[in-house]
Length: 480
Image 1 (cartoon, rainbow, N blue to C red):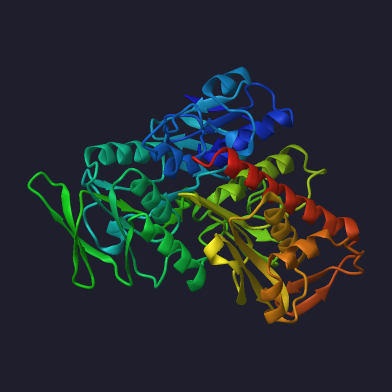
Image 2: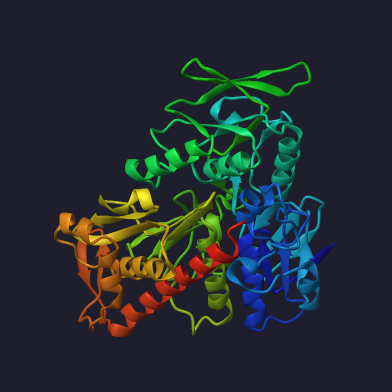
């Protein structure tokens, strides 16, 4: 037995929900669209899992954070999908995909065919066993990637109130979970091999501010070492964590956040892969013209930097999904995906935003004691990245606009003195018409097609809308 659809979305995460909403806006007919997900619930906003879901009081629970409430859109409950004639195939694992024949085979033996496939399979959490450490199956060892993980973590947290937690990993998940655990009055120790937290993004100076803030909330840091093994009690629970530096940490709860790996296995040997993900063009189209990919699994061209990248953040998932659907439904009207890389986080009473790329030389600015500070990254004489903690809506919009424009910077010392005023000034300047567009290739600088003022203006408007929404979202949904 089998079913056939015009459009199939494979994966039920954030990108799937935003794609579904965009499909309805572009005129998809009832019965044409299907979403296949291993999870038993309709798509939801994953950022809630490490924030509002873990709060000790009035925690976030479904249906309050179904997509697309994270972008101030409708809440797409199961009822919404039914009303729009969208088939939800939940709790279903796809065993294989035949891209040439346009067919998917589920673990139950059902065949689902399509005309257009949108891959939104996301990524999976890396397990300790992949690094030679056993123990992931212990009931008090937790990962955080989906709703089931979050429910498991909450159950363990409630069973070890005022206990000791060891968080493995100093990136997004590690930092956000450590904050949530501390809010729950659990004693937290954060362990990671780097010299400071958020090493892929933060400079040492920025990291030191957050580490000191966390320490003021009771979080301890053990840096420059890794987990090597666990100590178990007679029931199989972890009771201590052994580290490579020879130390041992008692633990009632262990949270592991050591990275993710894109879910590409179904397409290996069928689609072109790059940067660990599925390579797509500016319309999010893969090497097979009937297949598109979005979100964490997609490696797409970032026009601002002239290279292909794979970005692991909810904002990229939302926007790439919407763009892919526009390209599918209105191919002649949709252009190339022009995305300004954007990352943000909110922990305790802190809130930061980052735009662009953290390459080149970092120039810090602001008053760390006041809680409003930031940094610019300068590469080859141009601004390529901006970070700001504790900004206003106007200030976040300004750093986004400035980064999208990549203005020249000659004097780094003066840039540091100007601080936020630099971005505020640049963002308010009218943008002149540009005679040529310069893009990079392997052979150097290539002069291409003419570009006019509206091209720059479009990028500025996009950057401003991202920053403005992010500021509003942070104010209204800080608990997420």
